[in-house]
Image (cartoon, rainbow, N blue to C red; front, top):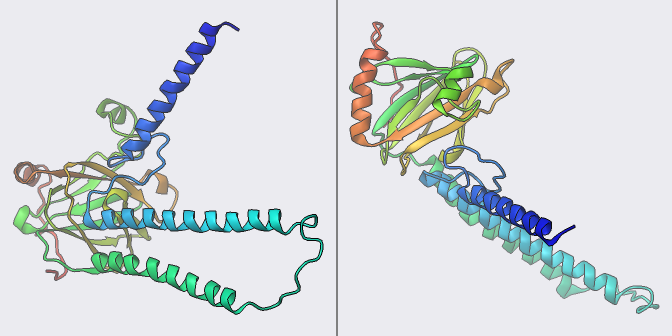
Length: 280
């Protein structure tokens, strides 16, 4: 084959590698991307701590794997039958036994400290700037906003077919109505279900929370970046479980005020508005 052929092949390969690297480095801002190797980019404090903890664990595992590999290679090379025809009959080594007890304990302590830090952040209870009630149905989500921002409620169904194509939204991740929240504000969500168990999961926010009939679960987040973020129900809930996406749009305070003013009319209701459990 000619050099021109191999040159074109190399160029195409380089383009593919660069394209893949670009997609991977993007790490999915609010949604997964092809060939993504990393977690979605975190946009909340909890998600950032989980992201950092995840990479810390990867480095610890890498060191352990390389150390064990080095020991295996040393054993194969140094203690094979040819080089060591008369094997040692040593049965105890106090220093070695102390080391392989203490070192794993130190590794677990190194893992425990940041994990407790993440848990503390998750379980903290800051004062809410906005409350939103999330209700899981078979198979869609409902969102209820309190009276102080309009007291309206709406359903969010999967955006399918021509509507999805025209909007340019990701397949099986977009909804016809989006949950909208302001940026840099503490948002608390109260989650329940109307029929079977569901789970409201948002990777970029770093959490998922079960929606259980007859029970109210609560979580909080503060998104530090505007954008549209996608998630899905992560509890196997029936026939259309795979078609139960979540879309949250994070906007500026001014854009949020404009959206709530429009939503009061678009999603007007006459039943007295949503009822929320007591929360700070």
